[in-house]
Image (cartoon, rainbow, N blue to C red; front, side):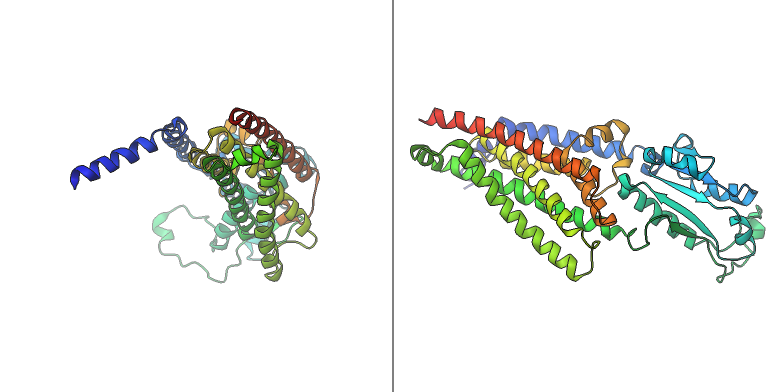
Length: 379
């Protein structure tokens, strides 16, 4: 019995290691995953964030709050801006901006309602909303002015629970729009669409090649591009069904801005097309083996990890950010965030659509050429 089990295990091991692509994945994927984790955890990730600060209140207390709110950042990542006029020139290069208005210290000192203005960078909404949530929670715990440096004295001081803490006002956006769920829900659905479309397309190609259905199609004079288009349309429709359920649910739950549903639908479908093209390419390139499906999953997961689906892109090193912003998946998830939060379609969103369509179309064209060559070898 032991000998038979050993033979079965040996046979399965030979089958598993027959594909060089699978062996490559076993080696490369852990390395890439380790590098991704190390690049994030090598130092506190929030220290990579970049904030602009406009301190209109030049009192000591105003300076203290400017330093207090930016103490989590490295010094070179704090951009001091003289006024709101100059802020527009540097906002696009930062993850957001803090404005401490004139009279803030006076209101705070006399326990009056006080406000700090936060200006989000709409092209980095994930990071901007994360910063807003952290700062907002920190200020809610503020219950006294730290004017006494003696710890023995402060240990005997009771904090006033009725002391009005400073609040953050978001410029040009509402507090409801600055909710994390507004960003995370589309990102989760986008991840599902990518996995469904990519794995489904790769599995479909694998089944036809493994069962020699392709040979029958070749005998029937079916061209490679017709096979590719049929798979594309099939899984676009499947993705459309999944997205439609999401949009219907979001409408019933009051999620999303009015008029943004069509833009969300287009963005999801562009993401599905790009994922389908990846699945088909690996499927036709690796033949009837299951390595194509495994590699499709691995590539899609890597694209999601470095694309800002679940963590802000700004926590990665600059080189990773620059590479990630070239990927269609990154541009599309940023477009999803902009449409979900702002409820409008701008040039950045449309350029993401165009880039995804061009990339997906090019990959499908390459897949068609590879499949056509494989069909000719069968005849």
